[in-house]
Length: 367
Image (cartoon, rainbow, N blue to C red; front, side):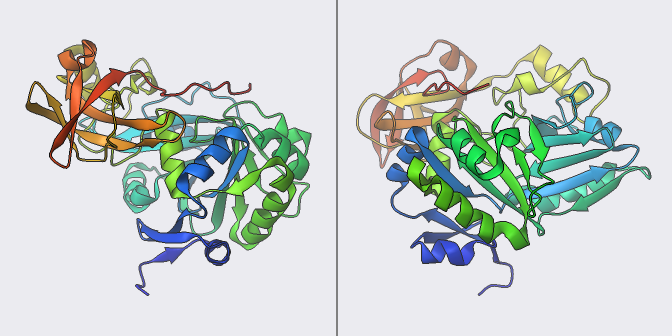
């Protein structure tokens, strides 16, 4: 096997469960166990368990931790309570998006950044470049495993395994479970559009925790779910994927997440460029679309308007909930705002699609 290929601590469990394993940004990861559609529906109707240990974790601590985090991210942690998390892009000086991350604030002198696996090393170099003598930056990605329990039954499962303290967390709140031998950190976050929890645990306890969750959650319909369902779930929920909807050449404003850019906070990297971008506006805009007929859109399919190619699909899939093709892509602003009818060119055939709003489906998340 290629020396650069990595496995999560759960690799053998995935193989034993009959998972289809794929290469995903240098990791061997489960794409699906049963089928993407059945795993997707399990999360929407009951609960799914994901191994997302490929994600990166970077700890920033020290006297200057808050100052460094504030400089790095476009969002604002100055008034964020301890043990709360916040979603934010990291931008370069031109306003392009280096990564989109979740920042966990333990206290003003300790933060953990959960970053995309495809950008972990680049993020680390970027952060090291900005750090000062009163901050420490440590990549703990290889020591920490990350599991996600997602779906309407997730609260009941977490209550069974970790008790009321974790089950009663509010959205984007987290806690350290010190009374448990595993000493996990449990957060009420997720990437599926459902209520859900993510659990950080030392690699040495990962397999044990995976099996406890599957056993305790079995009666509530908890099933393992792979990267395939994770992608269809996040797209139905309107969540962005780095490398698809956002990248170095796209500002958060263009990608429709301008709400994460706090232009009124003190200086941060990319602020001047983002101020200019917000004043100037952009000629292109990220749209969501729903197919009006058969045809499943895929990344890089052409988006067509009046026989002219006006953009490319950023993400596209078959929606198991809506039972039709859905997707996102960048098009000219006036076409996006007029919600003009477009076509998606799939294998040289144009299929009609309608510009719509996200999320594609709405769910009532607790708290």
